[in-house]
Length: 256
Image (cartoon, rainbow, N blue to C red; front, side):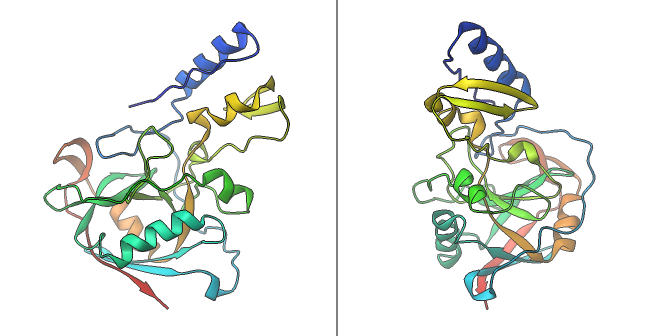
């Protein structure tokens, strides 16, 4: 499902061209409970996320023990504090224990945290505030291989418990930071430059929010690689992209 936000602009011509561009780009992917949008891109996974890090004490770590192996995540509360607190709340409540990776697309991402092995959806807390632009502006990572981000529906403010791990660099999922000024003198989107656009129009454009990255895999990328290569098909309510071999998160725990 694609959600297209038709923006008003300073001229009717811009309104038409920008709306057409957004429709054609398909930037806003829906990662919600029933969304199964597939982004096809023939890219190969690379190794090595940006390893710049502050002292270890700043960054909580979470270990997933899965049926395919272990994955250890490092989280960045200094970049996305509400998102990290939300994720850790689910970890402490054992929400992820017994859930599955229900959506796997090789050369894109692996997604989980919402359903058990019988495809019964777990109950969640209210959505967490979208922090994608803030995290990026503070020097947080983009949607590159090995990073973890919050999944959501077409509404940028709808993320709850589901997450995805990028298995390739996915720049189309990055938030677009709005330059200063009102109107904004110039902004680039999808390879094109637009000038003198009202700031409110850009800030409200759902296509520009992207997805909030809040951590990265620091150990267990070999497990991520195994998961992404599993054959997929239909399963539960989903017509495609479900691993034919169930990938169970047996436990999610905070580690030193």
